[in-house]
Length: 474
Ligand SMILES: [Zn+2]
Image 1 (cartoon, protein in one colour):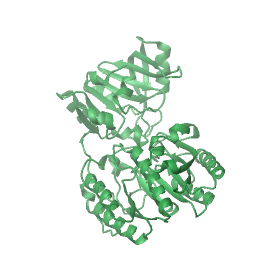
Image 2 (cartoon, helix red, strand yellow; image 1 turned 90 degrees about the horizontal axis):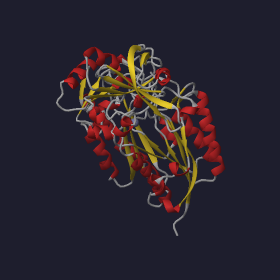
Image 3 (tube, helix red, strand yellow; image 1 turned 90 degrees about the vertical axis):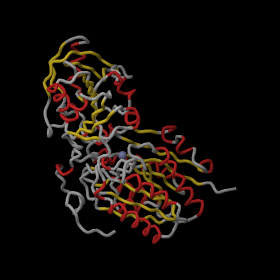
Image 4 (cartoon, protein in one colour; image 1 turned 45 degrees about the vertical axis):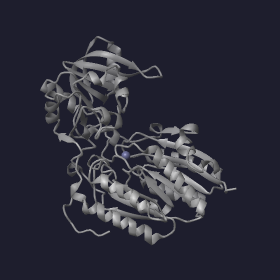
C-alpha cells in the first residue's frame, strides 16, 4: 500500500498595479471553497486518490491597485487559522499569483510564505503555483520547496499548472526527497504584451523549460516574465528551476536559461499590430476585415488599470467612426442616470474619468439609452448608450469582457460591429482566436505599455531596457 499524504490546499491570488488609483479591499476578493477549490485540476492528478485533502480556501480578486493591509491581514489570518486546524500535514499546496503588493507590508507572497512556514514548521513540503506575471522574491523561493508557473500568455494553462504543482509535491513526498529550488532574477522589465508565449523569442525560451525538465532529477522549470506595472523591488523577469535534491544542478540549469533570456533581451516586442489610438481607429475604419478589435491597452482592466478612461470614445466620435462598440467603461453614476431616464431616452452624461483622474477626466456626452441590463441579482449592472455611430457599454463596476459571449451579454453582438474597443492588452483566447483583425492602441493609463513613461521609484536598477545596455552575468 502506498503511503497516504495529508495536504492542505489554499491560496490568495492578486496582481497589483501600483500605478492604479484603485485599492483592493477584502470585499473585492472572491472566496472559493468546496468543488471550486478541489476541482478536477486537483482531484484528477495521478495519485490524488492517495491524498487526504485539507481544503482551506482560495481567494482571488481582479487585477487592480495594491491590497490594503487590513484586507490582506484578514485573509492571511483566516488562511492560517484553517491551516492550524488542519495540522499535522505532510505538505501544503498554495495557489498564488506572484505580483501581490500589500500596503505597508510590501511583497505579499514573501510575507505569506513566511507565515505559512512558521505555522507548519520545517518538516512539511510547500508547493506553490504562480502566474508567469509574478514578480518573484528570494524569500518566496527560500520559503517554498517546489514552485511552478503558467507557461502561456494569453493564459490557457491554468488547470495544467495547478495539476503540475500538486503532482510535483506528490513526487517529492513519494520519493522522500527535499527539493532544492534555484532562482535567478534577470534585470529585464517586460510588459506582458511584449512577451506573448506564441511569439519569438518567448516561444523558444518557453520551449526550453521542457528540455530542462527532461534532465533526470529536475522536477520543474519556470520562466516568469514579471508584471511591469508593479513598482516593487522584485519586479523583473525570473527563472526558477527545482531539482529533486541537487541545489547545484538546479542553479546551473537556472543560470543557463537566464543567460538565454538575457541574450534575447532586445528581441522582445509586441506580437501584433500596434498604433496610436487615432491610427488604430483610422485603420479599423478602412479595414476590409471586420470587426477590428482595438485594445485600449493603457487602461487594461486585466492589468489592474481603472477601466474608466473615455479616451477611445472621444476619438471614435471625433473621427466619425460608425458601427463602433466600446466594451466597456466603468461608470456607476452614468448607469444610474440611464436607468432613471429609461430606455429610449436622451441623457446628458459625463462618462468615465472618475477613478483614474491622472490620465484624463470625464467626457461629456448627450447619448440615447439603448439598453438596461440586469445582473443576476436584479440590479441594473450595465447600460448601453448610443452617440452617433458609437455604442458604449457602461458598467457599474470594473468588468471583464474577455470573450464574445460576455460582450454579447450587453445586448450588442460584437460580430455585427465594424470596430470593438476592449480594455485589454493582448486579446484573451476567445477573442484572439476569433478576431478578424486586432490592433493594440498605445493609450495612456495605469497600464501604459510605453513603460518609459511610468514614474518608477522602487524597481532595482539598472534594468533593461529603461537603463539601456549594460553588462550582466547571472
Ligand atoms: Zn498573468
